[in-house]
Length: 397
Length: 66
Ligand SMILES: Cc1cc2nc3c(=O)[nH]c(=O)nc-3n(C[C@H](O)[C@H](O)[C@H](O)COP(=O)(O)OP(=O)(O)OC[C@H]3O[C@@H](n4cnc5c(N)ncnc54)[C@H](O)[C@@H]3O)c2cc1C
Ligand code: SF4
Image (cartoon, rainbow over all chains, first blue to last red; front, top):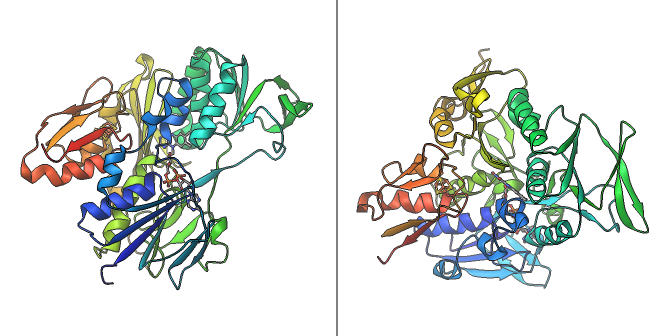
């Protein structure tokens, strides 16, 4: 493909902005347009459940880039105006305000929308946390209350529980797994995490489902659990995952299946790419479709997409990676755990609360987790790289 | 080019070290970034720009005019 004259990026957050930056860094000097639904200058989400929620940072500190750096991109920013329609063949996007933008290359970086609880509509006191507005609203609610229940035991729920507890609230964390984040961390490290939360006074309700919200006069008063228990709360946080923001693509002709389905180059169609939380691309090293919801992927995949737009033609083969901060623990997670892998301590000592665990699968090491050992975990990452970057051998007939 | 890092923003991800080990390292105890070369040599500047862009905490600032 020839180098495009005009690149349009839809979604102006981590993945979208990184794509624009990478294009410029690689020498693209054509027209560049970013269309974003939010009216704020691009900001970062990881601090929302950490420093912004705790009040350690004001919201401007979560901005991804200072204004001057955005200006230096020489891009046209159309903010606060969501795209509502894509014509993939014509490479044309229409926005809510009626703007029509045609480009040679379109990059979709619309991320996720927070999933809500089925009975939460119209009820006050129930919060999600995906946008800066959500974080600010939740913070002001937490400052006025004593009891919060966090529903959802994935990374966002566990992190929100830790921040709320550190603010001095009574916190219950509810979820279906045997321990928070078992799916992402494996049982050994998840048990450690459960201990950490208990030691800091979080009340854990693990292995239970939410039966429903309890309310009076339209305000939430607690939650009912599948084991019959009622937990009182003035504030409930729904941290039950996100849904790829693809509703606006319903008539685009793109293949949508838990995200935008892409090939190994993150191409969704001729001249159309997807990047970040919304992209489900073919990871050649794993030999399957993969969609990652983490911050590091947003910028790494952005680099790959920018390179592909400019004709470098290399498949995107990352080692998945995320981090989370809970209480005084920094957790780093490289690779993907699998149900049949064995955990092995490769550095440090769980008894001393600093260690690195490797998950060994049938094909070899697949994951490395660091508990308060970020640097050492990164060094052990080398032992799993091959599993992700070497395309699987073709099956012998 | 002059690099500054915001230690308070850095989340210890180490992406910068993977990309530009000549310029960045991490502290042993908490993984926070350590700047080895605040004014990197010309041959390292491209990877430094890549590190700044990939840093998931937006903690690396570059002054291209310095
Ligand atoms: C509270 C919180 C804490 C997190 N903490 C961590 C962490 O510790 N570590 C980690 O690795 N990851 C973390 N993540 C995940 C990380 O933030 C995401 O992976 C990252 O934000 C993905 O970037 P993205 O640009 O793909 O999507 P998003 O950040 O979701 O951005 C998508 C953008 O597109 C816009 N948009 C949506 N629809 C349209 C439309 N139709 N037209 C125009 N624009 C549109 C949205 O408004 C948004 O601005 C966290 C996420 C949250 C919410
Ligand atoms: S990439 Fe950014 S967050 Fe990670 S260690 Fe380097 S400076 Fe810190």
